[in-house]
Structure formats: structure tokens, C-alpha cells
Length: 216
Image (tube, rainbow, N blue to C red; front, side):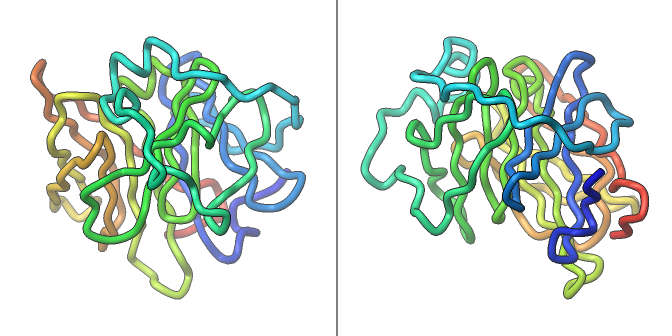
């Protein structure tokens, strides 16, 4: 088994909360992929099953995420230095990526897979099935041993969600603005949940702790 602590001292949490949801993680080391499903799963090594990238954005993602309905522009292209390789059955296609506009710092891209949608930000990326992503369950957290107590948070929100509430273990709550269906920021503290406020009400997604042996 490959543990998260082997990746340059960075801890990572990947959230795939739906019962049938499978989270496909970008391989950060050649030949290694991680996947998790369910709220208590520990990332495990998975077989590198070849799946052809999707040729289009499916209807579920078009309905849920306005960024993917926008026509592609030259500026949406993922720079070579940012490109990562997917492993597993995501069918992710970076050539269909849209770059998030309006972020104060950093860069992020949203792109489709086969029955999934993907987010790449803060030097990492994840895919999750369409229904789980539309429910706000694509949340990515990472940290660096050089900056203890700081977590890099990014997440995907469906249309109609203009801001999210980030709840910390200290009891504090921070509000982040959503740009092009994406929110991202450096958070001082340990994130325990994220609340998405949309036209149909609020939804709170619980963020699981890091894998065993990895301490924020």
C-alpha cells in the first residue's frame, strides 16, 4: 500500500461520500494511483486500468456546472508544467478543461471524465462521479510540513452556489467566494466540513480526517 505521507511530506484528504462514488486521484508518482470511496475509506493502490478519455462533456455536468457550458478559449489550455497524468477508470480529458476565472491567487481547471467531473488546483487533482460532484462532495485538502497548521482547500460547487462556509475544528467558520463553480484558499486550521449555500438551501459536507499515520 502506498501511504499519503510518502508524497513530499504533504498530507492529502480526498472526499467521496456517496455510497457508490469512486474518487480517482491524479498519480503524483509514476505508476501509482490512489482511490477512495465512502466516508471512512483509506486510500489504496488501484490497478492502472486503461480507459479512453471522454470525447465530450456529458449532460449531467453541463446541467450542473456553468463553467463547462462556456465555450473553450485558448486561455483554458492547461500549461505543460501543470499537466498531470490520470490513472484508473476516470476517462478524464484535460483537453476539454476550462480555466477558473476570478481567483485572487493560484490557478484551477475543471474538466470532464466518463461519468465524472474533475478539478485540478493547488498542484493536485481529483475526479468524482457526476452525482456526487453535483452534491458538492468534490473537496480537496492538502498540507505541507513546512507550514504546519495551514491547509490548502479547493472544491467544486454546483450552479447557484455563490459562497461556501468552511468550518474548522476550532469552531471558527470562514466564508469563501465561489468563482466559476470553484472555491479555493489557504486555511489556517483543520477543516471539518463545508457548507454550500444555494437556491434550494444549505448542504453540509463532512470532511474526513487524514489517513492513519498522517497528522495535519
